[in-house]
Picture 1 (cartoon, rainbow, N blue to C red):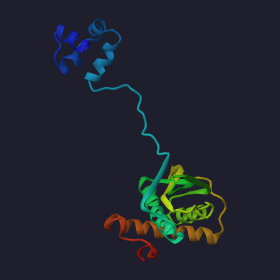
Picture 2 (picture 1 turned 120 degrees about the vertical axis):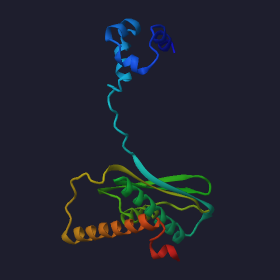
Picture 3 (picture 1 turned 180 degrees about the vertical axis):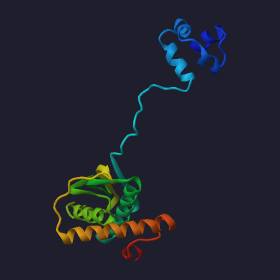
Picture 4 (picture 1 turned 90 degrees about the vertical axis):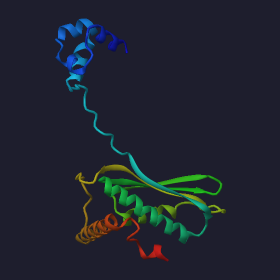
Length: 204
């Protein structure tokens, strides 16, 4: 506001006038900020460009209306969440090496179990297989589960080439087929919605 008053007292009312003022006059009037303000009036900003922050993790949690005790139901819910996390990661162009399972029991006691893979992934099947493995390491409590969550972290760009562990020909072919299948399913989801395709086990 003070700067605006100084400019008006000097007969400068419009941005166009400010952009055409000699540097010396503006520096006498506004000090060291005179040149900077003139550049801004000309549409020039010399501030360093700050790149967008990189996502640190991608996750999804589900809180249940009724506590769940049956392991089969928990696994079914983990499959749903795995598909959502994997799809989101692929849409954003990320893969992650660390997969975390979050489980909260009826008494609000919460456990987080993580596993770091040798190679980053964003495939639903790998995320799902990993969290089912982690679920088996959690000592279950009576009263059931209130919340389940999955987080993919230690992210890299999906296009970034990382040094991969040596894979057998069979493992490599299996991985390629899984990626191709996942891409095909994603195209269907993009056209008809995320619920358009899912595993048969979720339809039971």
